[in-house]
Image (cartoon, rainbow, N blue to C red; front, top):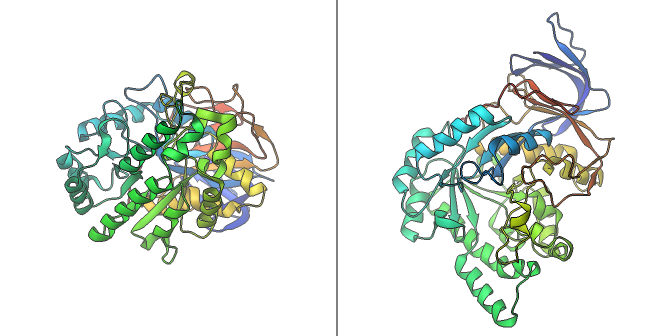
Amino acid sequence: MDYLIKDIQIVNEGKTLVGDVFIKDRVIHKIDRNISVKENVTEINGNGKHLLPGAIDDQVHFREPGLTHKATIYSESKAAVAGGVTSFMEMPNTVPPVFTHELLEQKYSIAATSSLANYSFYMGTGNDNLEEVLQTNNKKKDVCGVKVFMGSSTGNLLVDNPLVLEKIFGGVELLIATHCEDEATIKRNLQKIKQQKETLEPADHPLIRDEEACFESSFRAVQLAKKFDTRLHILHISTERELQLFSNMLPLKEKRITAEVCVHHLHFTSNDYKNLGNLIKCNPAIKAEHNKQALWQALLDNKLDVIATDHAPHTWDEKNEPYEKAHAGLPLVQHSLLLMLKYVQEGKITLEKVVEKMSHAVADCYQVENRGYIREGYFADLVMVDMDTVSEVNKENILYKCGWSPLEGTAFPATITHTFINGNLVCGKGVWNESIKGMRMKFDR
């Protein structure tokens, strides 16, 4: 089915202009004022609404295979689409972890039959799969990147062998995305706090996984990247101190070292552990207020390049264990764009800047082919937003399989009304069309 969206405020490439968008054969066929077509199309009145390029989330955990009691590619991609996220890049810490190309392609096969959004998957790294990792160089156009857990992780995805790290940074030819926290610092902090108190609590989390742990690991990653001229992307920056490692002196497309900030580090602070406890326990930790303020400034100044979620669902029972046993991670992909639109309404950031950081910049950072912009010839991954209608997060409308959100009870001053994936209206005013699945993203490398 083809669509003609009429009289809508198009937010794209730093401007907002009123116009029409004609969607035909999966792509944006024409952008102009007063488009009229002879074809049989479905016309949508966009008067008073905004049209954004779909958000591209470069860091999610959808848990399939092996952890489907928490989430599935289907359930979380549906939540993503409802939240205006039309494409995602998913992490390798599933069960088994993605240490081979055979396992990587199995995930692509699952997504091809179940994902409502467009998808890509990272190749995982350990201390013992270097040969498989380097084979990713032959799939530059087909794989978003290589994920390296530097210093701290769950299970055997931790890469702590210095020689292996050197070979990864020296040998991988596509983007390397890193989780940076220093394990030795974390262990030292944990031992110190345990000597002071018998029972740990959520408020101890940012003291254990502190600013130093993040900086030491990020600094090491930047050193390696500069040594080998590696294309490095550091995920979920959470501290003021780390910001000195990044620059805004070059346009994004010319940067070799880039950084991501996640919505929860822009929204919560360590003061929120008092009310939310383990529900906001995540790695790296949500930290003191001054870090949040510095992250906002760096985002607006382009030292931080993209906004993502690190969407990481766990069951309610897993989050309500005592602190040391409670799983780390927050489900966020359904509400990330809405959360940023809340800050637009509050004057913290412009709508054009949100589109830049959640769509354009992600496409540029990863060299995503024909997505992330509202351009003729690009895939029609589009989101219609009503900036005048409130939407509230509650149990009845949460689509995560885990069934909860740290944002429950939040009223957002905007509503996502329509989400198009590759020209298909997958969700429009609460009506779903799940017959056509998303596509595997390609990369222009």
